[in-house]
Image (cartoon, rainbow, N blue to C red; front, top):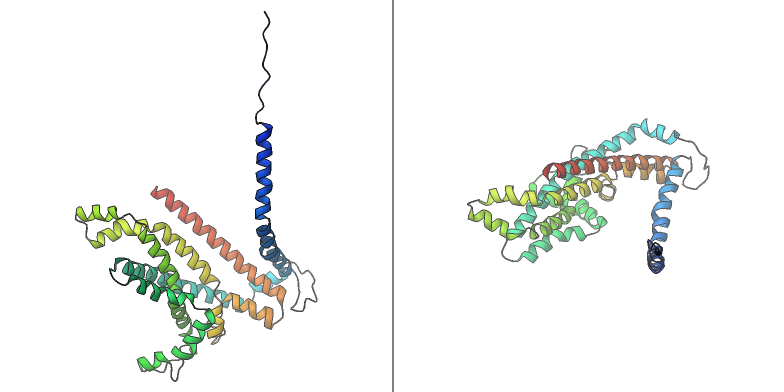
Length: 306
């Protein structure tokens, strides 16, 4: 008696392979335009900027000679670069805390209101929609103006809000908080509205007061949103430029000059594009390190709470 051995089945039918290949081709067709834009406006400028940071190119594109790490060595020995970096760190420290806390407080306030919520939402978020030039000129010429500004007129003082090295940075921070807190407020408000109401109802039945519900339910449920807001706020503050450039120009006495403004000055005023690129990549490296550290800390915290 003879037995017939069946041939082994193919691991994957030919038809499925063709379908998968067709889907791959269609996918590449759809993402192709985005990839071209991404390569042209992000990847290529990033690589070309790195090349320029290793050269002596000026704003006219001439004298483009490779100098290796000479620009980076000069930057690390440049006291004005360190001063601008320190100003950026100070601005980040002074602005991040109130922007996070005030955004949370405003969101809690609006979330617990029972009337005209739309008006409060509009009032808190509207400044964020204004262009940076409008905000800077509004505060510089109408609020901080020493002679007839709204702030000195209301307080009865003659403070040089943007002309005193000890006050200028605080003035820029106050303007930034007023201008951008609406974004954090909106993120917190959306997160508050996603918290299940039965949690609060059960806590109220158990006798928990408003403070206990805030500490035991609201804040833990907002943990991920808070982490996201802190990361976004730190990155935005480290890249500050517009309001400082328009309000103080980095003065007085370089007390508000950020590192991006310093790179702008040496690149487009001093015509040293190569050196300005090196300064920019130093900031880029700092931002990458801070982002990785934050990601690591948040991941450890999530693992500890899970």
